Image (cartoon, rainbow, N blue to C red):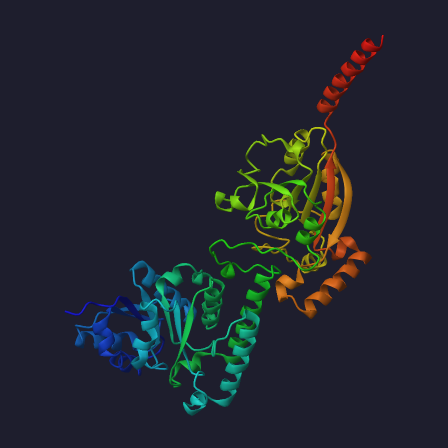
Length: 501
C-alpha cells in the first residue's frame, strides 16, 4: 500500500453555486485523493439557492468521498468564509489547505500542482496565476478592463510591498497550515480584499510564495464582486500596510510576530547612532545601557573604546561587548559602579521606562563625583507628523518609531530637559535629529536630499521638525556624596595644618 504524502484539506467556498458545485467535486483529480490523506470541506455561505442540498445529494451518491458540508446560518462574506475554513484546517491538524471556488472559476484539475510545493517544503503558499503566461488571461475570456485593472493594481502593490508577484488577484490559493498559524488572518476583512491582506501578511512574515500558471475561466462568482469597491479596498489595504511599516499608522492585522532580527544601525547619514558614535572619544570607557545586540558597541570598539553593556537581552550577544550584564534596568536594582565610566549611553531608552525619574536618581547617586558624560536620545513627540495626526484626531501606536507600542513615556525637547534638570543633571548639549528617510526608502539621492531639507528645517524650528532628540548631560553629585567629600577634604586640610604647625 502506497504511503500517503500528507494531510490535505480541499476547501471549497460556495455561494449560490447550485449549477456548478457538483461539477467542481467531480473534477477533483482522483490521483490527488489517493495520494493524500484528504478531506473535502464545503462551506455554503448562506446561499439562497439549493447549493447545500445538491452537495449533500452528491455525497449520498458518492459515500466513499471524505466530504463534509457546512452551512453558515448568517452570510460571512468571501473573506469571512475563508477564515472558517482555515480555522478548521488548523483545528484538525492538516498540513496544507487548498482553496477552490464552488462556481468552477478555477480548475480543480491542477489541484495537485497547487499543493505539491507545500508538501515538498518548497513553499509556504502557492498561488495560481492567470498572468504568468502572456496572453492566456485574455484568451480565457478575461475582459480588457479587468485585465488592465488587474495589471495596474498588481504593479502598484508590487511597488509598495517590494514584491514581484505576477498577480495579486487570483482566488486559487494553497497554504501551508503552519504559515497560517503565524499570521493574524482572522483580523482581515470579510470582503473580497481578504485575499490581498493575506498576501501582505505572508510577505511581512517572510514566507515563501510560489506561483504556477492556471487557465482563465469566468463563472458566476464574479457577479458578486463590486469592481470599484474591490479596487479601492485593495489600494487602501496596501497603503495601510506600507504606512504601518513606516510607523505612520498602526494596523493590527499587519502586526506580524517574526523571529527577532538584528536592529540595523542607522549609519551613513545623520542619525542618533552616527551622532552618538561620533561624540564618544577614542579609548573611552563606555557603559551602553539597553544596547541590545551590541551593534553600537562594535562600532565603538573600532575606536579603541572599552564597552560594558547592560540589557535584558540574552547572553548570545555578550561577545559584542567587553563586559556584559543581563539585567532588566526597569526592575533590577542598579547595584553597579557608574563612576568608572567616561561615557554612558542611553540611546532610545528613557521612553521605555515607566519611572525614569527613579532610574535617573539612582544613576546620579551611583555616579559619585566622577560626573560621566551621558548621551541620551529619545523620540520627539512634538514632531510635525504627530502634530498633524493629532489635528485629525489620530494617535497611532505601532511596532516602531515615535509611537512604538513599548514606549511608556513621551517627551518633547522641553519635557526631556525638564526631567533631567529636576533629577539633578546639567544639560551640556541639545540637538535635533532628522527622520531616518534612508531607513524608510533606502540610501539614495532622494533620501539624502530629504535629510538635508530636514536639517535645514530643524534649524528653523527644532521642536517642530526634529524626529529625535539628542542630548548630552552630566549628573551633579548628590548631597550625601558632597557632604562626605567635604568631611574627607576637611580632614585632609586639618592634617596638613597640624603637620605645618
